[in-house]
Length: 138
View 1: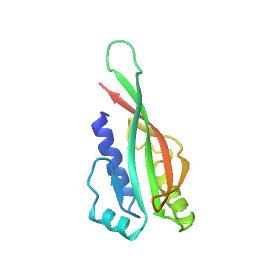
View 2: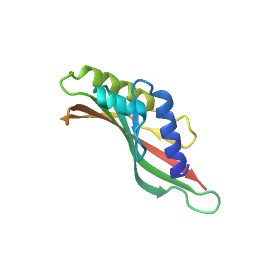
View 3: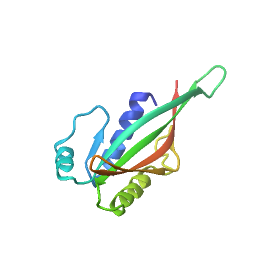
View 4: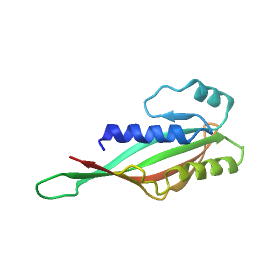
């Protein structure tokens, strides 16, 4: 699927599957729920798509297959000094949404991994990252 279609698919899936906290999307205004969560120091999640390399997968006449790789990054934010349990549980739940998912005929997600960013600006942050491959047929 094309870049714009993949982005729409991934953002729609996370918005549908993750209802636990508000989500901040790239280059989108903060929702009222997100603003309220940040002001109250309640948990929230940032969702980022990072495209990687692309490569031609087929040779010859007929249909063309281009494969793109990249990563989804879901940053979990909880109030600083609130402990790590809530952030870790949220990270596990976000991981479960994508782990091994291949429901679309041309998208495949890998095994998520985690990075503890730590405390910054009043928040404790854990990043959940999952690689993906997106095939575009033409």
